[in-house]
Amino acid sequence: MSKPVADHPRAHAAENRIAFDGLVAQAAHAIHKNRFRSAAVSLQSAARFAWYNHPGMFRSVKLEDLAARIGERLPPAQGMRVDLSGHVVHVLSQAYAAGGHTRLVWRWIENDASHINSVVLTGQQGIPVPHQLADAVAASGGQIVSLGVTSSSLLVRAAELRRIAESGVHTMVLHVHPYDVVPSIALANVPARIVFLNHADHVFWAGGSIADAVADIRPAGQQLTIAERNLPGSISTILPIPLTAPPQTDRRLARDRLGIAQDAVVIISIASGYKYGALPGDHFIDIHREFVLVHPEAILLVIGPEPEGRWQAVSEETNGRFRAVGMVQGLDDYYGAADLYVDSIPFASLTSLLDAAARGVPVLALSETVADSVLTSNDLSLTDHGVHYTDRAQYIQALAALTTQPHERRQQGQVIQRAVVEDHLSPGWNRYLDRLLETSATSPDEAAATPARSGPPATGLSELEEALVDFQSASGLAEPLWASRLRDAPYMPGLDRARLLISVPTGHRRDALKFMVPDALRSKVKIRLASLAHRSRRRP
Image 1 (cartoon, rainbow, N blue to C red):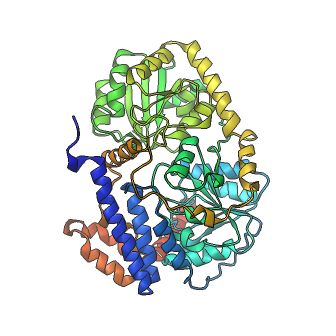
Image 2: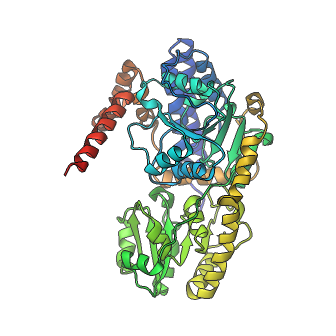
Image 3: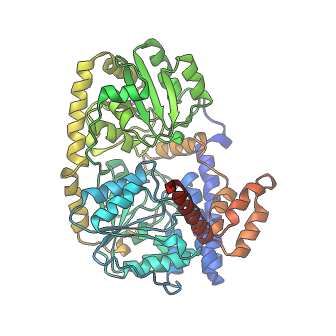
């Protein structure tokens, strides 16, 4: 049965486009009035909204052009007195301990012994920097620079980022969040070579116009870069997700620590909880519930979602053999205990799957709607290895075969391990890095020469966009426009913050107050509180 028009993804995308265009128009008006700080925040809110509410396009040249215009009117840099000349500088919006985004950066640095690698954070908001990232940067001889303590103004941060880019750095690699417009404001026409790391290749992002090169992590992302972001193929190159050699984990001890029977067949899946968001019938639980019930030897552990709601219900129904365990910091025991890995549904978790494959654990993935796309675990290493399925019955049949046949598990695990190690671990991965860093620069003017799509999607991609809109809605990622604006309130001038608070729906204003604190102040307070807590823990 077809969806009602009001519920159709195309209708939602059209509504999202109207909201997006309205924010971009606000930014253009603010530029006309010389209110550049307000304009920058409006652009960031537009990109943030488009990130979680797909507007029917993956890039906006108009937004990027307005960002460049703001960049022409930046204030002088405050001078943080850091010298990163000759460094490969990785620019992140924020660094996290959990998830694959920051892990990619520290693994890159660990694998690159040929360059000094440093990190610049545009909006860390006082969040502690993961020790793995700090350790990797220190071992490389680099520095970590946080722009968030300089000022709450995006313009001041952009001015400082530009100063760094003009100080003789080797390359600037942008790992920024899709909404982050600080690089787009700062880095137009700078002498440094700019590489955009396309880690969020499934959604809208800002930054194509300033890129000399786009590092796509997989073929599906590269296809979207060229076909939908309308960036020239000459600036796109594949850089697989970097991995490091996994630790050796004693299987028996790992199972003992997790309280798992030694003779069980352990299946794991690891992803942020939202990646399992789907409608009833297509949910990860619905796909695997019957399988677990008819295979008493199987235990299916899902790391990421909280053990509540439907997850709690299926755990009770299976006596804990199919259960969610929430977010876990240390994953080595889960990987060490695993016989099989199954990908998250409907949105793949590529890094977690590759981590399993690098350990010799056989992996399976199901995508019933948009096969081999950016919503799946598409990857150079996984082609033609019996990993991906588009038919649910065939996927369950393959899962059953691997569950009941230990020899087949070992054989498939070894095959996929060799393929992943070749492309994702040093020294094999370094050939991709060398190609990226040594390729001659392409002018950003070429990147901006072709306007991003404003008409109908290219053939074969409309289904992807509909699936993306459905996923954002079902997973709870989609949010109203006022909520996206509120997240950027800490960067606004005071009067803009007050006006925004008044516009927030009445029932949400109390919660909105926490966003009224200027970001630089909030960051300094968090850093101070974390320092005091650390000192307190060290006292006898």
